[in-house]
Length: 514
Image 1 (cartoon, rainbow, N blue to C red):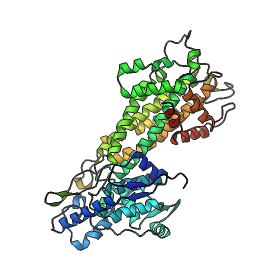
Image 2 (cartoon, one colour):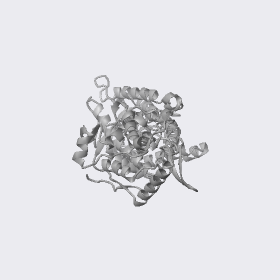
Image 3 (cartoon, helix red, strand yellow):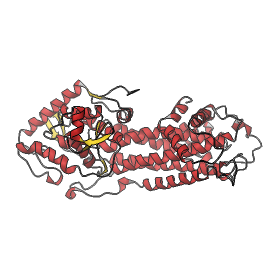
Image 4 (cartoon, rainbow, N blue to C red):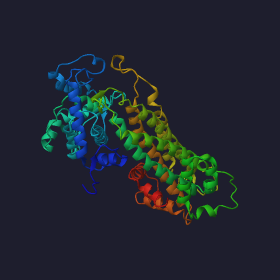
């Protein structure tokens, strides 16, 4: 694969968001360090030593959930783990994208490799073999309540490891058995505790959260560029980004956004051209308060990013194995509970509503022809009345914003008890993660629509040029979208710009100036 990134080494340290992205979407390989193998083996031996005393240890020699009181004989413990995987693979709904599943598998492998889960290194080897050979289990997207781990989705992953269920192998959906034969992978035979360790963690929501944070970063950069383009495209006042204003507010995100906008608009010819004798005193909030709104969004994104980064260094199954003062301890807890992620991702979706919402308002302003000073024809039509221009682009953006508001309802506030009441307070973090993934796509399309509209608006300010950053972004847009002369379907144009956003094109434009 061209431009394949370097391998990701599982060494017990915190995964980076970039590492998750490289495995999920760029085909990077994964390896396990020697030290991690040693730590895993020591913890495994310690756990078996403790289990040999006959003491009841949850999920190792007992049943699961409300069956925790049932103690099982040694000759049934391996079968217990396989039965767990089969019974818990109860997911429903459309399958996750293969990249999402790969991210989930990496986060799972990294958690196990930290050496406190009590599993064999061979279990991580099996996950890595699937990742490195392009064998990805088919995983239904719904079924996790975000506590006790992402049980159902992870059980479908584990099904693939043991040679059961369907699998995507290099773009073809075949049985796991066929995929294993084609890839030369031997199905794993689960031992004590290993089935539980595979499914008893926050790995789906953490993986989706990591990819969402990565995508949200590119989206934020594009939103800043779109805002700067709107300022000059609508002949608005750039003086609202005066650093003194933002220092007086004392909000770090706002200060950073205003600085980025100043960079993008630096040396613009458009701003000075209407700086004097302009009858407009102030612009609408969508232009004048853009640094304040996007600054708040930026701060919320940074908060979510910190939570996800912390989780990428976590061990979230149960029970865990630790070296104590007098031998090995097997300690039950609840690290599998997804509430930190659920709340953080809920907040991110609220922030995305405002990122997209203020963009839609700027689209409306540019198309509405209310402002006679901005030189823009109604709906940016080359022949108003005969041609509709970008009229319906605003409708589509409005529809996306409406759906974003629906998805922003917080998943974490609604509890449904499970497992006969033993699992009586769940996070619904997986729902939050899935809704966040969908929200990013909707918000990306809104920002793409703004970039489409504002690139056209800039054309009406010619021969004057905007700032270097805006002009760089404008050239990038024109590589995929021609200027609007006659009416055409805007959908392919929006999709093309949305792809540029996803690829980080506008991030480069911003970083070169920051």
